[in-house]
Figure (cartoon, rainbow, N blue to C red):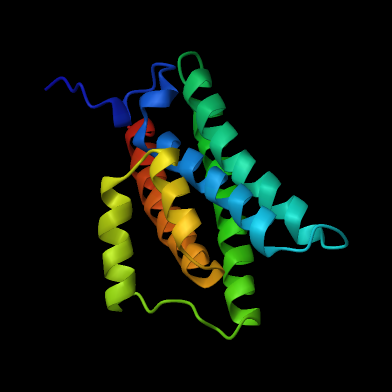
Length: 163
């Protein structure tokens, strides 16, 4: 049965991948978060978060492009993207822990609302509007929700690539 699901099709058209679009949102949220809530100097976390968010996005793009000629290289790069996003997840969790352990419980109404909203929104402009209306704790939690959703999408993508 042929599929026209662009999410699963490694044809170099990475900008149409839902996982890539969500990784762009993660990158933009992270840049906003860094600019507004982290110290400008003397904290390596700023560079780490920026690079992890960038690496997540860039490796999805590169992996998808590489997938047109080498599925093995594609799988490796998508795994690098997953690892980078995991690193970023840890940074957001550290931030929340160091600011009163305000990470949302997965079953909380806030988390359920964020999951539903993030599931339906995949453009950086949507998230930039949210960034301007929310505080640091809420943005960190939204970033975590988005990272988890992107990780799920990347796991599905890897399963498809390995077939």
